[in-house]
Length: 385
Image (cartoon, rainbow, N blue to C red; front, side, top):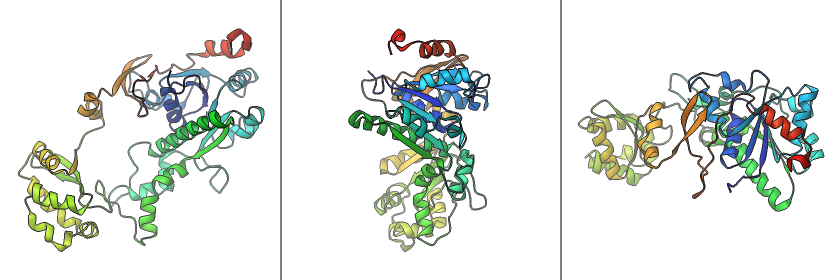
């Protein structure tokens, strides 16, 4: 028995945030019924065609789900959706602002009929306020939360290279649903959950907001370096490869100087005495480190840093992740199928020892149309529900 075996979720979802949340639920054994637009489906299906002809976004986010095409403005299809909602434990939606209210699928309406239902709404900016009715996408929320201004180089701000606002939101929705399921199991009541992208990413942005807002300092963009810790970032080895390292405290700085750089005199240098001084004089630290690294190849640099207990990393590409030696050694990959072929997917982070995640197939658009219609339109005593 997986942790969420017996839990059924209906998802009126698209793009990234809600599908990311419901995929976590599917990985824990929940049955997830994905409602898609007839003939078109979740628009993330068409973002690209890189994984055996399917979207890299879609295969990442939708394994282990069932797909049914429903025009929820159609009387007949709405009857199917209503029959599904009458039997599920959780409803998740991230439709455009105001859509569920117009359709009578909002939490107030549905939970009046079924108080035990867990209803989770994901939006860009939450309910009310001057931005409540605005559409929101990942980059736009990165801008509004201050992340773009804090990312990039001194010359140019930059977005984060992944859908970080969506992912943050999806994870909070996932944890909120798990919390609500626990509450229902112990207290018997359902729940209404609202998760806004601006809130999720805002939480993640509080440290730089505090540092700048309370410290009275303008936001510093430092590329791959750290704005408030030094040394922290990329340094060139003698073979041209980049090694990233992080010094977190004065003890580590001393070990770096004595055991890696062979520059014990730097320990007593007042410019580098403590982290605030090192941050202020970071421009002087880089040439000192790279002068020492210039005599060594990347493997030697990493070996010396590891021996000294200094955290470090090699620069890898996204494609390198698929063959990362640590993930391979720990057998973190599993094969997932699509209609066009198979691909490798990481095991869920919340895996429980002794329980194998289902890692189900990625559904074709409308793959489960007939089965789901037959199941949910049949009398309950016929299907045993």
